Length: 275
Ligand SMILES: NC(=O)c1ccc[n+]([C@@H]2O[C@H](COP(=O)([O-])OP(=O)(O)OC[C@H]3O[C@@H](n4cnc5c(N)ncnc54)[C@H](OP(=O)(O)O)[C@@H]3O)[C@@H](O)[C@H]2O)c1
Image (tube, rainbow, N blue to C red; front, side, top):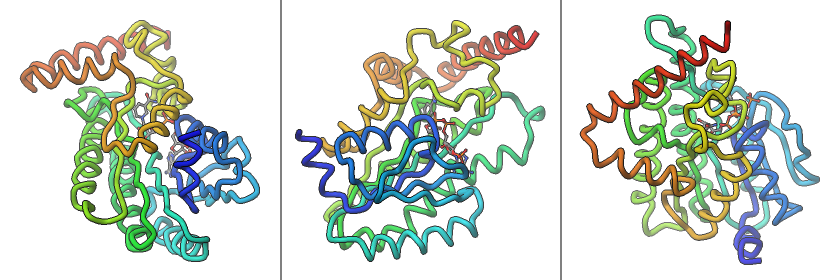
C-alpha cells in the first residue's frame, strides 16, 4: 500500500533495457502496483510483456550516441506533455564480456563502455533539465562488481565502478533539488546476462557463486523498496552485503588476486562445459 502511494507520484517512468532480465522484472513490479503507469522502455528489442495502454517502447541502440540523442528529444517531449508529477528514470541496460585481453574483441569492449558508462551519463544529463522542475529519481543499476577490480571481467567491473561512483556523487550534486539518485548493486542474478557475457551456463550452475544468485524479480523487489524508502545506495541481499563489506576491508591487491582465482575457476568450468 505504501509503495503504491509512493509510485503514484511518477507521471512518467523511463527504463532502459526492459526487454529482459532485471529491467523486465522492474517493469512487471511497477505494473503490479500502478497498472496504468506511463512506462517508456528503451532497448533494441521489444519487451516480451505488454507495457500497458499508457506504455511505449522506444527501439534504440543506446551504445549509438546519435540514436541516444534522438530518443532523448522524444522523451523530453513526452515528459513535457505529461500531467504534473515526478519522473523515474532507471538506467539499467548493460552487458559484460568474459575473458582476457588480448583474446577479447576490442570493439565489444568499447561498445560496453559506450552502453554501461557513456549512455548512463549522456541520457541522465540530457533528461535532467526536464526532470529538475518536476522532481524525480534517477536509478542506476551498477553491480557488486563495482566494489573491486574484476579480472576476466576487467572492463565490465570498471564500468560498474564508474557508474556506482558517478551516481552516488550525482546524488550529492543534486542535494537541495527535487531530484535524487539511487545506486543499485545486485550480485549474480539469473537473466540473459551470463549468456550475453559469453558463459555457456550461468556460473551459479557450475559451482562458483552457488547459493549467491537471485532472481531478477527479487532484484526488482529490492529496487522498488529502495526507491520508496528514498535510499541512495543498496547492495541486494545480506550475502552480497557481507561479501562487499569484507572485501572492502582487505587490501585492493589481495582482493583482486582472490577475485582472479574465483573468476579463473569460472573460466575453467566454462571450458569444461563447452567440451
Ligand atoms: N545478471 C547479473 O548477474 C547482474 C549482476 C549485477 C548487475 N547487473 C546489471 O543489471 C543490468 C541488467 O542486466 P540483466 O542481468 O537483466 O541482463 P539481460 O537480461 O541481458 O538484460 C540486459 C538488457 O540491456 C539491454 N541492452 C543491451 N544492449 C543494449 C543496447 N545496445 N541498447 C539498449 N539496450 C541494450 C537489453 O535489451 P536489448 O538486447 O533488447 O537491447 C536487455 O533488456 C545490467 O546493467 C547488468 O550489468 C546484472
